[in-house]
Amino acid sequence: MILRPVRDTAADAEAVYEVAEAAFHALAVSRGEPVEEPTPESRARELAWYRHLARHSPEGCWLAEEDGRPAGVALSGRREGTWFLALFAVRPEAQGKGVGLMLLEQALQHGRGCLRGMISSSPDPRAARRYRRAGFTLYPVMGLRGPVDRSGLRDPGEIPVHPGGAAHRHLLESVDRLVRGASHGVDHDFLALHSDELLVADTLAGSGYCYRRGGRVTLLAATSRRLAVRLLREALARVPDGVEASVAELTAEQEWAVDVGLEAGLALSNRGYLALRGMRPPSPYVPNGGFL
Image (tube, rainbow, N blue to C red):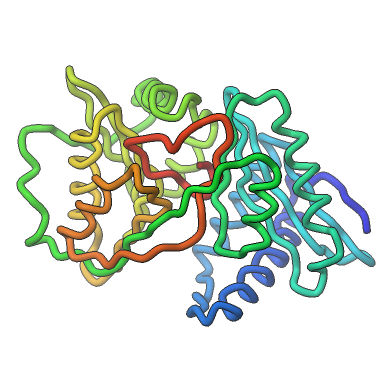
């Protein structure tokens, strides 16, 4: 078994993709869950995400190879004192051989000295056990999904929400630091490129932002629940007709988001964990599983 850094190349991105697809497909089948077939757009976005992480966090991205074939992967990053595990997967045939443990230990080394750590965990009990043994607190998470019933969305009130862009970078990073203790930094570049829109609210009482791609709310942060509710309602109202909305990674601290989702007719379910070290769940906040 060979462990090596993931390079910012098309070949390494394909290797990571191969491992992740095999691992998460097997997990879905084992749990009797529907398997979503990737689209050309989603595949291209995944490959770009892997290369973004390898480019900006080379010391935190590792690939395990066995007999010249990719067996497992761990992608992690550091942003202003916050470490996050973006992807952790082992091919089904390589599981039970210590591959996952080696990869996780290597990724955790990248987070040494960081005050905070964040992981979006799948429901796989083996992953949850590893994260807990590494000192992370596990917070069960919920998700909202379904067609949006716009008639259930309440009057937005007087808080203005408008499209954001590069000129709002300072605002985004300021909100990040207030809510989660660190900016997302260069990850905002990726999110802006791979989102349909960025919504921004900026008032005398506080600020907030929300990224949306199709029906999915990919990241939301605000300095007050009132602003967060306004942003989430606006994002759901903008979901195209015929497209299912999705809001994921919600801990119990995000009941404000659950309430908005229920008023919009979305269905609530529970799945996986938000694993945190050195911090409590940021709130009001909807994390991005790939950048936390």
